Image (cartoon, rainbow, N blue to C red; front, side, top):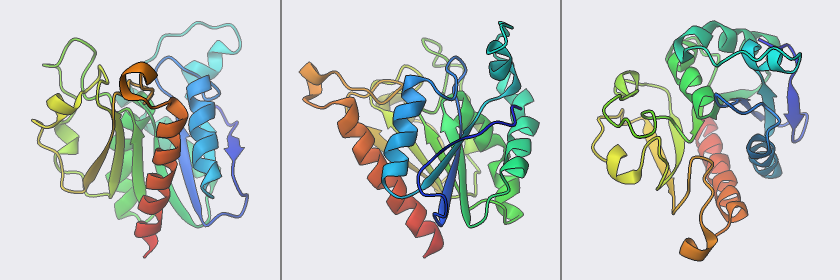
Length: 212
């Protein structure tokens, strides 16, 4: 794991969200920058980090993404390095959220984190709906919010409706959103900023409920 974090939002906020990037986009990709800015705008502290393979790309090493299962210890190491005070929610974009979901229950039982946030969860690879990545989601015990576009190729509304998921999981659907929650304005009349503003409000409410 890279020891470098990117921070957005109030330094002394009572709630911190730790986010990991997706398989192909760095922690400062346009999608991650926009996501962090929207969440920070609602008063939360946002911390972003990179897995080692992505950090290596900054040094010219073109490493492919490893299997998500192999990144669990890197995510735990990021939590240790962050040394967060106050309420901590972990998660990430696509693969980053998936890795967070793999370690979340253990950390929740230990009292180290309070919630899980996944943006564009990769329920299955694109065009391979039979290869589900949901087995561990059936019994998840940590309060979880998944933000998903209705036309996300990694899991559409119609597909996800048929999955067995833990009752602890709340899914917020974003109309006509793609894997980045971005809608087609001519189809939906909405913009990416509209969806990000709605997301920020929803995440703030989710975070507040964790501490009520």
